[in-house]
Amino acid sequence: MLLCVALTAGDKLRLSTIVIDAGHGGKDSGAVSRDRKTYEKTLTLDIAATLAEKIRKAYPDVKVLLTRSDDRYVTLNDRADMANKADANLFISIHINSIDKTSPSGFSVHVLGQSSNKNRDLYAGNMEVVQRENSVVLLEDDYQTTYGGFDPNDPESYIFLSLMQNSNLEQSIRFAQLVQKHLQGGPIKTDRGISQDPFLVLWRTAMPAVLLELGFISNSNDLTALRSQTDRDRLAERVFQAVKEYKGIYDGTLDAPVPDSVQKEKTGTVYAVQIFAVSRKMDPAAREFLGYAPRVIQSGGLYKYYIGISDSKAGALKEMSSIRKKYPDAFLVRIDGDQVSREE
Image 1 (cartoon, rainbow, N blue to C red):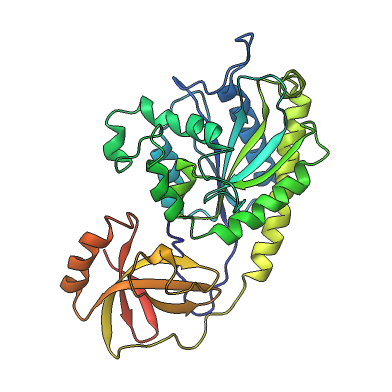
Image 2: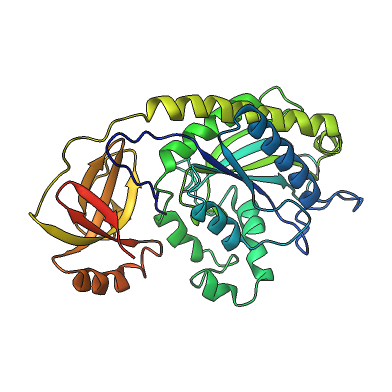
């Protein structure tokens, strides 16, 4: 997905907008305790609302949005769209885990991508929880059209998700590491680590994003903690501490001034299709480019990648129609000297 950040001379990156996603809701209860008395959707909303309030209180200048503030059903697409339209800098999706067995317990932190273990099959390990969280799309009408033919029960659907890894992966992992650190020693005792997994809601967001599984509703010890208002507040506080530390890093290390010039390959005005904007320089032969030869322009702390370059807007638009079949969130830009602007 794309990191949509527009920088001009003198601009500084700031963690200014955070979207907190309370998983499930409404007709989608999420995981349910064995005694049928506790629902994932209720726990996630409580923790999300508490976290939002803590951030607002500490940082009045930061806009904090909840994907839902009550017990309503929100599609995965709408959750991501809310974050994208708000130009959010960070997306936090809160969930509670569940499994048929009662022994597994603990918290885990997930970012979009292939398995973080190079020796592990992408479809093994976490695929059960990935398929469970993604299966919510089955509640939507015509979900295959909305999600480009995606079928949560078909392993082949995950090939595209693994290919189109979050272009903000570096920052997502950085935040994930902070969340993991602060959750350790909290009310949910077991640390199940950080993993890269093809969660649909993360794939559709255009900013650093993590999905948190804050304990197992199927485990008696975790469930006791999750049913405790005090322990849910403690969980929210620990995630808040991670946000606080990440904001300090984000605001500090990403304060790179925009250079006086950008890479120029053609003189005059050209049009192109932007597909990525990341904080690291990528190999032009990387598989993410699907055989295209990208042009890269450095802007502040970001490397922006363009394909379908044309001297005319019409020419770039013609290229974009086919490019969007592979990069659904690609958009048209105009490159004029050292200025890059988005075109409608």
